[in-house]
Amino acid sequence: MIVCPDEVDFGNAAAYAVSPGSMSWFKSQYASAPTVQMHELGHNLGHGHSGKNNSTYYDPTCNMGNRGSWTDEGSNFCFNAGKTWGTKWYSEYHVTVDPSQGYYDGTLVGINAVKDKTIAPAGQDVVLKISSSGEIDLYIMFNRKAGANNEVPENGDEVIITEQAAEMEAISSWTAGLSVGQTYTQDSWSGSGTLTVQVCSLETGSPGSARILVYATGRGTLSCDKNNNTPSPSAAPNSLPTGTTDDSLLCQDSEGKFAWKNGKRKPCKFLAIRNKNARCKFAAAAAYCPVTCEQNCKCHDTLGVIKLPNGKERTCDFAARNPAMLEKRCLNNTIRSNCPVTCKVC
Image 1 (cartoon, helix red, strand yellow):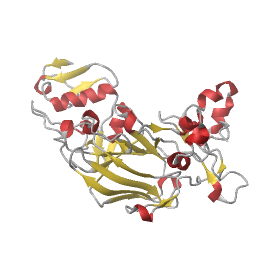
Image 2 (cartoon, rainbow, N blue to C red):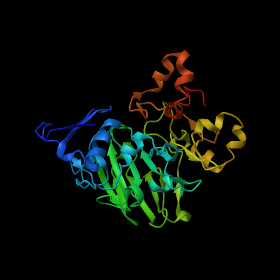
Image 3 (cartoon, one colour):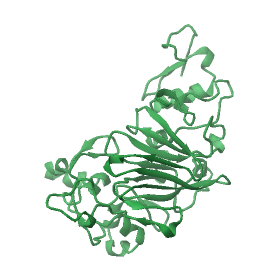
Image 4 (cartoon, rainbow, N blue to C red):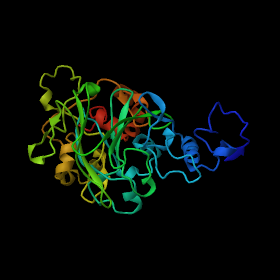
């Protein structure tokens, strides 16, 4: 951190930082403002800005939106869901859902629950990623207004949805802030019908939590009343394999993780390491991993482009192109789930 005279020109900016990197330069009058310091530190970590309503800035839930107090006292608030996912600080409590293949009915807690160790040993998450076949993914957090986030400028104690094109170095955008009973929808989500995000319950006690549903029409019908749910976690893809006429029998493993019995979240490849038959008797394992668990359905490779967690795009043909590398490539859970035939899962 280098403090410069106020006459230094950063292009009308208060400071400048290498992204990613370790160097930052500040105009003297802003050098002692924690909000400015955290913003530039975010750039050092590799984050882009975070906007709202087509603006590069102005996300009120993230330090990369420039909305905190610029005084020497600053404001206690953190990063949005997309930025938090990218830093992987809470990766043990990250979960991915692909609405074209499955759904999410779970509980989100704020980041303070991890620090205070009040997060439940099973069934609670911090960041949810809704993956897309396109360029933009959605990220969701419960913006709990507590602890290090107790002075967030807006949308405290709401479920916040953020758009971001890549896990790092991408500009994100505030998309929605939801309270209990509210719903966000987006038409034609990855060709899977209408995407729905619904907040069923929201508690602001200690630690506080929010139960949410994420699903796409045609892949299941979810309700806050679990007795009315008819989810289809093993739904068919948009493009059917050649010669297939009955898409109700098609399935793929989930790219994300499911809640295992000890509270840890596990990918489908965990089931195949050993004792697969015994592990697949666990209901969540069989539901999220129908290919690995050899359920009564037909596995298939994804025909189009697969977007990996690092933002790269690949195909199943790419995975098979080099037989010597196939086993290593299939250790990637996204490739393994999308290419079970190529990866010899089925």
